[in-house]
Length: 129
Length: 153
Image 1 (spheres, rainbow over the protein chains, first blue to last red):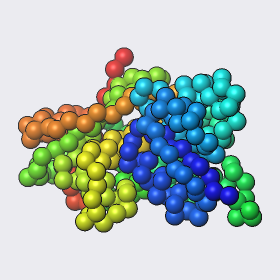
Image 2 (cartoon, rainbow over the protein chains, first blue to last red):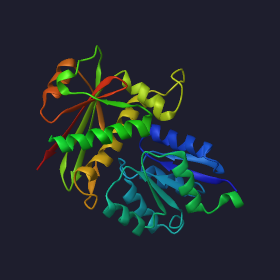
Image 3 (cartoon, chains in turn blue, green):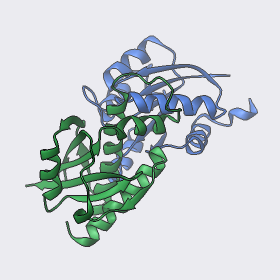
């Protein structure tokens, strides 16, 4: 089974790095879609089947926290696993993210090993599928 | 910037340049900084929350594409889209800011990081920035980097 993944980050270079890292990490990847802020991300989620969302927090137009609040209000998006990939260093805010249903948090800069392990933790042992 | 704060900031800068872009840093005293024959890019990130202020970094312009190539992990002959080099500098500053603020204060408090902005700066502006008391200097791949954190009430 391959995962359809949405990467939401206002930085084009970070979207490229995450995409490349996913492709070489051994994670079974189907389609990778991209968005540059939370609002664009919500539109992509409403129009496509997404298995996993990578999202940044600090973004223009709609930030990651606002996007999570919007997702919580939409039945079809409530259970989509979200993995936050951010420079955030506040323990208070990271706890707030988990209370909002975030499945995992990766502090930038990311490495392929960390990314692979976290996806494995969130999506289950895909090696066994 | 007092000595301990300056030491913490330099350590974070060296770590982030290495982890993000596989670029390595060296100590550089402000008095020893030579203005390179170059143009410069300045990235600014404002922050608010527990403390309000801004972090600014100035790098030689030619370092920005190298930063982008290294972050992407591609050879310098590879084609990169326009704007990617500036984007690399913004992401570097974003990562630096996210690491520095909890290290300088506390990881229990929250900060809101605002979208970074990039501008070109002249040699005169570079000298003025260097001469500010709170500016610290270090070298990355032998290029001088200037960094400044300011706080407002």
